[in-house]
Image 1 (cartoon, helix red, strand yellow):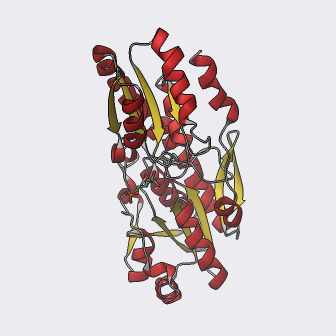
Image 2 (spheres, rainbow, N blue to C red):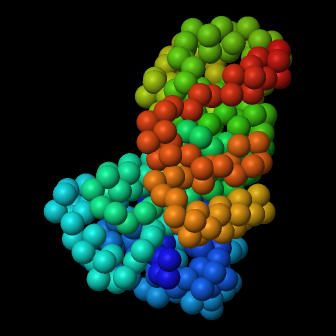
Length: 323
Ligand code: F6P
């Protein structure tokens, strides 16, 4: 294998640049040329390629976002778009592709691989951490810390005003980010799609335990939560608890930025080097997952089709910690 490509796709995640850097350096180390594809699958369809040498990835490990940009591509989801992408890859002499992204990225890679004979290897990069077969996706640890720091700031003003805050965090249809960041921020409650939000349970808590012991608090709400998000839940609580001073904060895209944590930088570096090794070894259609600290290959089919369950023991901590 003498020439490979790398691209980032879907929602960006802090640490993607560390992964790009590792892919380029591993390519050089193995005498393999590396080409960057700009703007994910959209760039593959347009033929927007950029040769990457060592200096192109200097001084980027500390930056969030992605130097290769990212975009969602409707064109690639059409057979005609994938044919254009294939022709561009062949014309460029690309023999393998490293795809950094989430569910949508690997779904596209899986469809493409079933039609064409260019191998893809995936690196899980999404703050949602919702990919099956890996404990961690790049960006998840940084996003947890970003949310935790925001919760600490909100707690200052919540306690100053004796207010109850509903803080909405990202995660698409999953509650991994909400659960872990909520626990780290000492949240009095965490509402996630994986656990049906019985508003009556929340009401019971607010009626009894909260009232007798707390003058302020934070409830973290995952954006995919079934009740429809923080504003709708806060509206119901305001109606039922008129004496509570309720406010809402939606953290939004700040969760996607920031300098990646050491954990994300090291994970991304390990996965980037492993992805190049995996392509050189002739393997394909797999994601580099991490299980209990060990890297392992997970077929795209499984990564995108199986659903990852919430850590029930972690969730049960909330009951103990908010006794
Ligand atoms: O998948 C990452 C993510 O940040 C989700 O948590 C969120 O729902 C979505 O992307 C937002 O997408 P966009 O950046 O296109 O608004």
